[in-house]
Length: 79
Image (cartoon, rainbow, N blue to C red; front, side, top):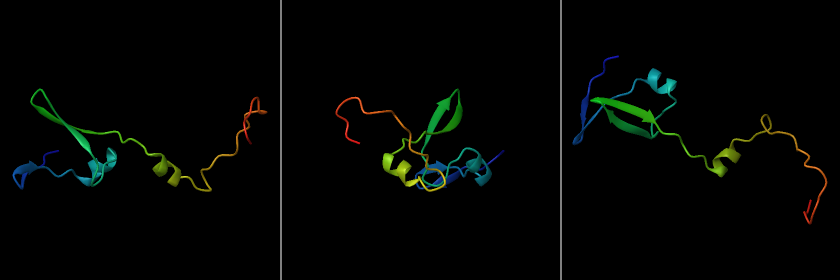
């Protein structure tokens, strides 16, 4: 796919077509790594670090699992 480079302030920018952005799961604000590799530019999506609060916020009635039994207490655990 051929795209055109545009001036963006003192830099140059490209627009990523929405179809490609959807395929690699990026959106506005996503971070990517820009790598120069043998005179080619590679744009590599970074893998986000998950925060516990964000993961917990995704739990709902349809995806919460049942309680898992870990057996009887063996020490001074408080149940």
